[in-house]
Image (cartoon, rainbow, N blue to C red; front, side, top):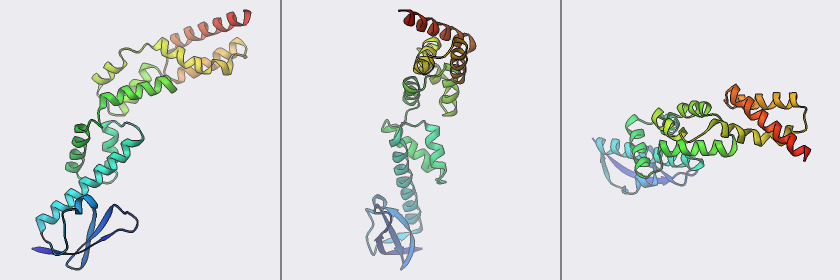
Length: 211
């Protein structure tokens, strides 16, 4: 069975899409890219129409993926979950994933490095906490091990504490220690490391005060 393209009209709300009419009836919407090779009067078989739908789904999913990773780098799992919300076929999702990997826009190792760097710069956390976060993002354990290998929890805890020291430096020792311990433990650092960092910071504060 063949059907004839009788009209293609621009969508009012989405300027990058057109409405496809077959035999005088609305059939479905298409991206401009998917519709680029079509013309009025063209005959389409059932197989042609199915292929057109598949290409359109791919273009839609790819554009959605591009928009999703524009805000910040994403892991492969994050992207899959995002595309799953629109119920694209598994084949379409795999094709989009392959495209982004080929373009070097999707790389779990690069994402893991980015994630750890951002945490270190803005919200330092322990290796244990980062390991859990990266696992939730779907990062393979061998990549997590590789990315976290250079990190030192003591240094990370000290950097995290430094961001809050000024806020609590006026407090008595017990209150200062309690707040800082809770803060550091909330970021996944073990008791021993927290205790050591708190004692070192307090000693530094007292030395600065006496000078």
